[in-house]
Image (cartoon, rainbow over all chains, first blue to last red; front, side):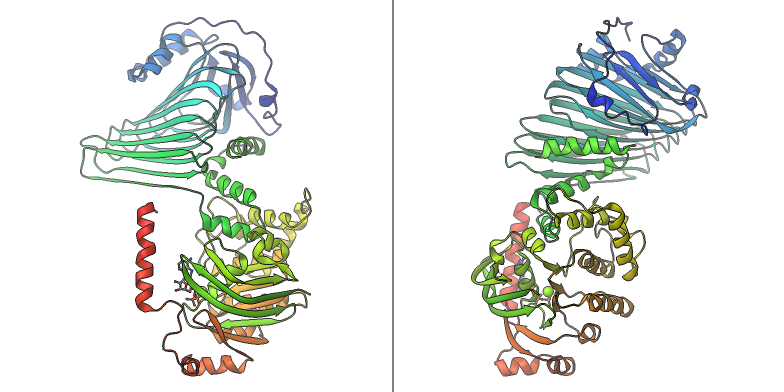
Length: 363
Length: 277
Ligand SMILES: Nc1ncnc2c1ncn2[C@@H]1O[C@H](COP(=O)(O)OP(=O)(O)OP(=O)(O)O)[C@@H](O)[C@H]1O
Ligand SMILES: [Mg+2]
């Protein structure tokens, strides 16, 4: 990665919509706006880990991250642009044997610059981190957001997030994750952006017994187009990967799920499963799921399923037969449908915020 | 006290006539039982009263206290006091039982009002205990992974919470073991009062051992072909339906007979395939 220059921060204000989320029960958070940390509230436990922005990062820490060069092997145009032009991001380093049960919440806010963010998370052997990110802007902008995480032997990463960029944004998100022996990662991402979105999660199971789950919940509305790609590549035997996608497309929007389970030759006894579920709400909306299994080995278990359609008529009838209006019934069914990700949000305010975003998009 | 009146009701599904002139009147305080062989239109009648969108009414009327039920949407019917305990209740993943019931209870209140959370939880708790249901049941997802018996009890739980004026229970006894049947029966009996009219659809007399019925109707070929007192059940229980069929001069009591049924089923499966369902 090139050394980079930060553009100076215009002001340190926290947008009111973010301020509302900072309730008393939201513990441990960092707010980073246009590349600068503007607030940092972390409990004593977090002193055991390293977390900072590039502008404050210690050179030896940067070296730790740069030593993991293979992260840079990933290639696509947006990613290359990111590496060349990065102007925001965090370095998070969890030393060996440190297991943090508290969730760390990171708010990434884009305001006055086009955001090119690159966050690196490194979990050393036998460590654990619960990470949550909230990606947000209010006006417009080009967003290029990358996170690279490395989960070393027997380490465990829980990575959840809400991404909520505005209608005039052009959004490119890439989340790369490398998991080593006995390591595990769980991704739970809610995508409630209003803008044109291209989001990719790439998980590489690098050594035996590595496991990963990626759940994505995505809602598209109005004339939005959004594509969500989940890749789990098995580069070792005895690895397990699960992809679950839940989508709702409203109005005349188009939502695409691309799910790829790739098991390379000799990666025996690996498991690749995938499920795609979708509700097409708008009469002119589209929702496509293209599950793909690329398997070059016989001794594996693999499956995929997709069920996409209108909201279930029998469920609607059942709820309405108890007096719920059509709108109430739809809302309940959709929030239930999206609950796999809703459940992992840490505070009621965050849950309510997510539900509100869903309601705004499913009117 | 409420009255539900069904006058000369005809209904069809997928262009097939299922109900062929139903007449029935249920008053608050009364308990009616409908019996009849499989495929004679019992569940269809229940669905039509509740307003299931698949069925088309071609003739007749349904009145609840003089109001035209057929003009109401499904949720309006519920709020007007109709309740249907379904033969096959839907599963709704991700929606907890208690969230669902709370929303349903609130839907009955004036705009903007809602039941006090404390009161609601206590009431739900009592109902769960009365029905000897699992304590964690309110927090489980609506009917998802419930056993047949749990689903049926859950229907009664909702009925207890919603206090309907006219309740139709469609095969509430199917899938229940003896103990569960007793619990459900006793709970329904406890709910009986002058403001509640009950319509029980069942295949078995044993349900009626727990819930006393005043009137018994037999359905065949989409019609009520016989009405009377408990003596009818006794006879059905020992002799089956043959004597009624003989009286009517029919062999097959079903609305849609064997050959036809096959074709019909094939037809609907084929369209399902085409839709990719
Ligand atoms: N939604 C539907 N789609 C297609 N056919 C239907 C539908 N509902 C009812 N039918 C048909 O109507 C006939 C009557 O069905 P119904 O479920 O009312 O019978 P029932 O008397 O309740 O039977 P059972 O005792 O088995 O519950 C059957 O032939 C059935 O296949
Ligand atoms: Mg039936």
